[in-house]
Amino acid sequence: MSEVDAQQKRPPRVIIIGGGFAGISAAQALRGVGARILLLDKENHHCFQPLLYQVATAALAAPDVAWPIRYVMRGREDVTVLMLAAEGVDTVQKVVRTRVGEIAYDFLVVATGAAHSYFGHENWAKIAPGLKSINDATLIRSKLLLAFEQAEASVDREERERLLTFVIVGGGPTGVELAGALSELARGALPPEFHRADPGKARILLLEAGPRILSSFPERLSKYARRALESMGVEVRTGAAVEEVYETRVVAGGEDIAAGAILWAAGVRASPAADWLGAPADRAGRIAVDPELTVPGFPDVYVVGDLALVKGPDGVSVPALAASAKQMGWYAGRAIRRRMLGQKPRKPFRYRDRGSLATIGRKSAIVKIGRLELTGFVGWLFWSVAHVYFLVNLQSRLFVAISWIVAYFTYHRGARLITR
Image 1 (cartoon, rainbow, N blue to C red):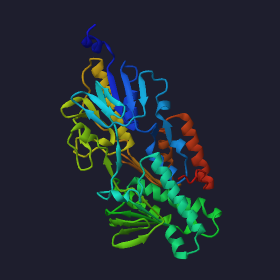
Image 2 (cartoon, rainbow, N blue to C red; image 1 turned 30 degrees about the horizontal axis):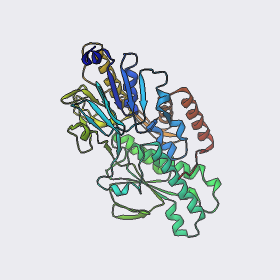
Image 3 (cartoon, rainbow, N blue to C red; image 1 turned 120 degrees about the horizontal axis):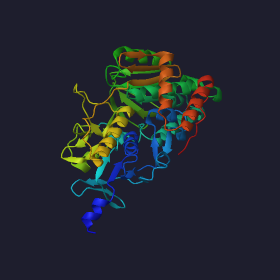
Image 4 (cartoon, rainbow, N blue to C red; image 1 turned 90 degrees about the horizontal axis):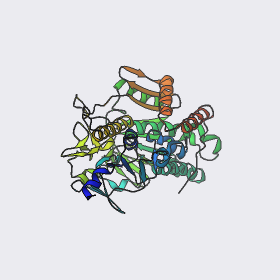
């Protein structure tokens, strides 16, 4: 048998780079088609990012919102999971470069997601961590809890006030959810356990450079979220662009603010995959893909999730949400499936808006689904059910639901370990 015949007889190889929402959805869409699927990720786990802020504020433990990718793919004989970081792609030779060598592909799905953007101030990253991974969440949790512990041990009043001042940069959903959860931690869970420093007097500032927080939501819901945060003791400042970040202070809006911990929720940038593929990208590093989510000129390379710049019929970019990442991943997997089966190509990708949700606290959230708008406790119930439903398995749903019920009635935060 010639080499060409052997290649024609072997199952097509699909490489998926990234084990997030988009990558997992692509693998699920390829079930049973007869492909050899390699799923590459630099981490060994899939993380439910919408709930990372609860790990960061000790409401949930890391295993409640993250699962080994091998566990998610268990029973899939067609999927090989490799804990490898992609280091480059040769689209001419059709290989992915890794530290252990080159891996050939017939179809490639790039779902490497996004990282934090510090707008040219990369030195701020070590001081003001963002929230994109389990490592980020556990680091933030330790920084927050350590600030409370150091405040309890301090004998200097000014130093204690600084340690009990927390600055969150960015008024999007992540910043709003962090601010609300941190307020509940400081004013609800911790006060009975501290005797010298009063966590209930913690100062929490949410800084937003734009004119309002949650700018992707209607203005009415944005105003509601601001009022809700302020009722919880959070200082919300809009029009407050950060000018400088130091180890113990932030300069924003012309004011120098001493702080015990600084958290970043102000922007994202795509992974460097555009450089690998030699594809044009926008300022955030997102790749402008064809309507079928393929890279222009390379029909066997699909780009999905936060890395893809996709515009709807109205010219508006598809938002970087878990729902859109899942839809893109599923679309790419089904498109590859149809090509393998010799079927007609799928219609161009069309994003279906499932709505936007953000929680503000234990009794308050905002929900926007089409014309439906929910706030307050009803919104919080809807948000809770939606997030529990989208967890990866029944065990996680039960654990998270029980943790929320206990926390709701007792303010208990059990995942309060300081790790270094």
